[in-house]
Structures are given as C-alpha cells and as structure tokens.
Image (cartoon, rainbow, N blue to C red; front, side, top):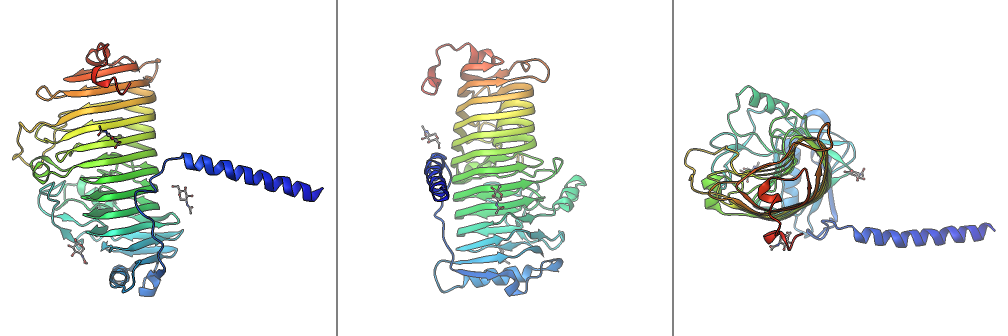
Length: 447
Ligand SMILES: *[C@@H]1O[C@H](CO)[C@@H](O)[C@H](O)[C@H]1NC(C)=O
Ligand SMILES: *[C@@H]1O[C@H](CO)[C@@H](O)[C@H](O)[C@H]1NC(C)=O
Ligand SMILES: *[C@@H]1O[C@H](CO)[C@@H](O)[C@H](O)[C@H]1NC(C)=O
C-alpha cells in the first residue's frame, strides 16, 4: 500500500514538474541577452584585508582584489565574494570578466567623505555634468569600457548613503554633479541581478553607451523625497532588458534617455531595443518614462506588465524644444496603476537645458507611441498630451484604457494639443484629436 502511494506521489510530482517546465518555458525573460559565465576562480574580499565592521575603509581591498582579477592569466575571469558584513569603501572601478557577488547580509557601503570623492569627465552626450557645469563625481561603483561583468548574489545591499548628497543639493552647496550609485560607460554584456540598491546619491543604475545589459530581480529603494534618485536610466544604449524588479525611489522608476540638446545631437547615439517587464514600484514622479534627454533618439521600447502605486505620473514620454532627436516605436501595455496624479502624459516642452547654446529650432519628433491595456484607479487626471506646434506628435495610438477618478467612476477628461493618432475603448474618452478620428489610419495595424 505504502509502495503504491509513494509511486503515485512520484508520478504526480513528475507530472507537475512536466507542466511546470511548460509554464516556465512560456514566461519570456531577459536570459538570452547576455551569455551567463561560470567563474571557476573565486576570491573573497577578506583575502585582500577587507573588514566588514562598518567602520574600516576597504577601498584598498576592493582595488587590490579587482586588480588581481584584471591581471589573471587564465580565461574566464573571477568571482569576488563579499561575505556577510558591512564593507565601507570609497568608489571603485570594476574590470572585465568579473562577478561581484554579495552574500546574504553583505553590504557594500559608500563613504560619506564627499570632499575626497573622485571626479571624472562629463559625458560627451551631455557636454557637462547633468546638474552642474564641468566635471562630475564618479559613480560609487563604476565600469568604463568593460565587458562580461555580473553584479549578483543573495540579495546583499549596495548602499550609497546618499543623504549627505541630498542635503548638499537641498542647501545648494554641491560643487559638481552628484555620483550615480552604479554606472557603466561604453560597456557590454552586463548582468545585474538579486541585489538591493539603496539610498543612491543621484540616479541608481546608469548604463550609458552600453549594449546587452540585463537588470533582473533587483530591488531599488530610496526615500520618496530624495532628489533625482531615478531607478534605472538606460542612456544611449541598446539591448537593455529590465525585468522582475521592485523600485521605490524619489524620481522616475525607469527613464530611457539619449543625451542632452546640442551635445546629445552632436554625439548622436540613440537608445534602442529596451525591454521593461514585470516591474512594480512607487514614485512621486514617473513609473515608465522616456526622456526628457532624448537628443540622440530613442526607439523600439517595450514596457509591459507594470504595477504602479502612489505615483506622480504613470507613463511619461517627455522631451523639449532644442532637444532634437526622436522618440519612436514605443509600446507600453498591461499597466495597473493605483493612486496617481496623472495617468498618461506626453509632453513636448518640459524645459531644462544644459546652457543657452541650444538650437531652438531643433525640434524632437515623437511618433508611433502605443499605449494599451491600462487600468487605473484613483487617477486624478487621466491624460495630458502636449505636442509641438511645428512638430506635432503623430501615430499616437491608445486602446483599452480605463482610468477611474478619485471619487466618481471616471477621471476628469484628457487635454491635448498638436497630436494625431487614434483611440479605441479609452475611458474617459481622450481629446477630440484622437477620439474623433474614426478611420484609425496609422493606428490600424496596431488596433
Ligand atoms: C576609475 O575609472 C575612471 C574612469 O575611467 C578613471 O578616471 C579613474 O582614474 C579610475 N580610478 C582608478 C582608481 O583606477
Ligand atoms: C532575492 O530577491 C528576489 C526578488 O527580487 C527573489 O525572487 C529571490 O528569491 C531572492 N533571492 C534570495 C537568494 O533570497
Ligand atoms: C518596434 O519595436 C519593437 C521592440 O523593440 C520591435 O520588435 C519592432 O521590430 C519595432 N518595429 C519597427 C517597425 O521598427
């Protein structure tokens, strides 16, 4: 009898596993974007004098460990293990073919010594620091011209201790642009997974001029009132895949960018092939954003299965006069938002320039924006679309959108200008420019 039961149990387990593998196969993931490497060589930060007492400065230990990986004679790179403990350090550079592995309970913590923080050159597509002219502070963890880099582990923490920086911003005593928490410049084949990022001084994760970047199972946290703590900003980069992550910060959760005004136009490096899926979060600004720095152009973006709570704006496509560039072929679908100031906003003139040398007739082109399957409750204003008179937004296609107001079943109506496209099953009805176009025209292939 017992044997039979065991047999039946085993059989059921096998069947369940069989169906499970099907279910798993059905879920689309980022896993084919970057080949996963197994590292035979493993070293620990403690081998290089690292002390996880929260007080000892471990800059030298990180530099020496990474120097060792950089000068390995064998192929395949190495894994740098960070055991449980709090490792205080100054900013440091990563190298190619390395895995930074944070054990459960491991914290890599940024020093708050802002006076000795290294400066680096501004990005060519920005022409200056994003906040202030001139140089900018190097990101806490930095990779320039690297490839095959993994930051992962058992959900250890990278802590930027950003409050000193936020206070300098509030008191207007910053001398240069604040550091990002993690930045990759001119790099490829990067994976960031199973890590908690918290209290970034500025943007959290900034891949710029990169290709093939995966961010998954990441948690990104910063106080709601922390200034400019964007979650993930793919910038002039291609094949970036972000999935299964939770972001709650003081600024946009994900913002796709490509440089700023005359500098971004001259550098001319666009962002394309950006996927964002299964993201949950909360922010006083935008959930899914494109812009506003889009001077190199942004195209081929898909964002889907997004859950947003207590938001400023659910979906925000933003650019500016003088930006030039383009925003094309953007699809945002399957979004749930609860408690938002605005549901959907497309704006052509958000302001903000690096200097007064921008070309006022460099107008952005915004074309082919599809937003579908959006359900919102407690949305104060459903939608706002402000195109540019001399460069109207076109092929703006909205379908199956239901945004409910705070009290009644409907939010106040949409407001639009300088836009064309079509809408289908959108409640409240969007502005006449979209709602009255019964022949769906350029949207027909999409509807
Ligand atoms: C880290 O990288 C930056 C940018 O490439 C460089 O300017 C800096 O000298 C590097 N720092 C160290 C300690 O190697
Ligand atoms: C780490 O966190 C992710 C969620 O972001 C979770 O799916 C995963 O199971 C956690 N991993 C470990 C080892 O706890
Ligand atoms: C639009 O973007 C998607 C996602 O990247 C891509 O698959 C598709 O081919 C693009 N369409 C055009 C017409 O470029």
